[in-house]
Each structure stands twice: as structure tokens, then as C-alpha cells.
Length: 225
Image (cartoon, rainbow, N blue to C red; front, side, top):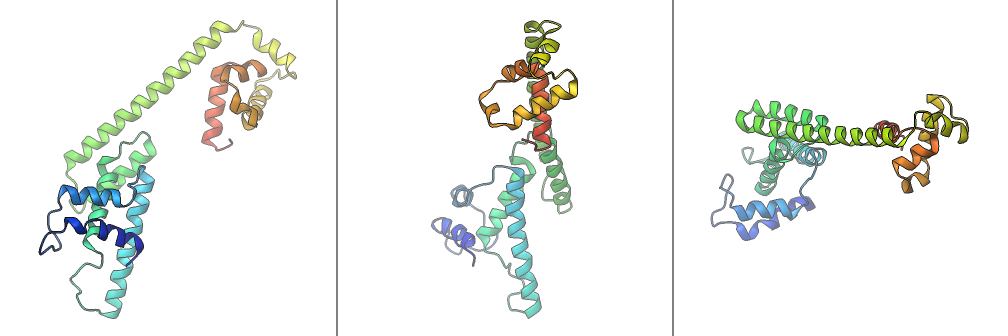
């Protein structure tokens, strides 16, 4: 038995009932013990990774049992606490985790479609989770849009029409959009950018804070910073 298995088994020993057997109804205390015995995943990728680890181990053991024609062919190769932990992980993936990006939502839908073939999740529960996630993603988009609007309004109010060109000439002659973008990227890649605000970077190069924000987001997406 692996270490993580032993941890899960030991965690529920005090909750075991006389004659405890596979399929018995788990008490709330036992379920809490299984959730806390090992750190519960906080992201979709973490939950899928742990679930895959248990599933792979189970498949490997079943293969060995079949290959060697071992006894007790009808008993599961995994301890009951581990099987219940796998159900907890599946619930996290299917509806418990609140998602805020499209990529994770697509993973949820794919998992739900696969689980639906085995009728492990009701359609209503799955749709409720998806609608909740879509609302969370919508709110994130609204917040980002409002932040961008705020930066645009501030830059428009604070900068004269010809300030960008004048500042660009004074700070190294970045007269074209490409040169100014390159200057912003160079600052964002440097260590000093950690201590500078968007407005300070924009003022140094001769662009708007909104432009700096967009360049920083694009660089994070491409992992340039």
C-alpha cells in the first residue's frame, strides 16, 4: 500500500462502523476526514492530476491481477477510502470548483460528458455548475473592461495631444509605435518595472497607461515576462 493510501485509510479508522464493508454510507465526519487527510486540490488541473494518479494506479493493479489470475477477482483493487476520495475528486472537477476561465470550463464540460456516459452526474447539477462558472467568467471580463476604461480615461485627461510625440523624442527618440512598444517591453522585462506604476512606465516612453497594460497582458500570455 502506498503512503497516500495509508494516510486515507488511517484517517477514517475512527469513523468505521462494526461490519464496515464496501458500499456503506459514509458519515459526514468520515467524508471530512478524507477531504482533509491530504490537501484538497484548489484548481482544475490539480484535481484532474490527482484523479488521474489514482485511476492509473487502479488500472495497473487490475491488469496485474488479471495477468496473474489472482483470487478475489470481484473485489476492488483499491481500499474503500481511496475509492471515496476518487469520488470527491470527481465532484470537484464536475461541479464543486468555481472556475473563472474558459479553458477550465472546457475541461469540466469534457469530464461531465465522459461521466454522463456512466450516468454519474445529473444533467441539472452539471448545467448549474456551468452556468455558475459562466457568470464568474463574465464578472472577470467586466472587471478587466472597467479597469481598461479607467486607464484610458485617466490617460486622456492627463496627456496633451502632442505629449506622446514630445516625450518620445526626449526619451531616446521612440517616434514610431513599434519603437515605443519595444521600449515598453524592455522596461517590463527589467527588474525596475516591479517598482514602477503603469503611469510611470507610460510617461517614460511616451505612451498611455492603457497601452502599457495591454502590452503587459500580451507578454504574460506569451510568457515573455
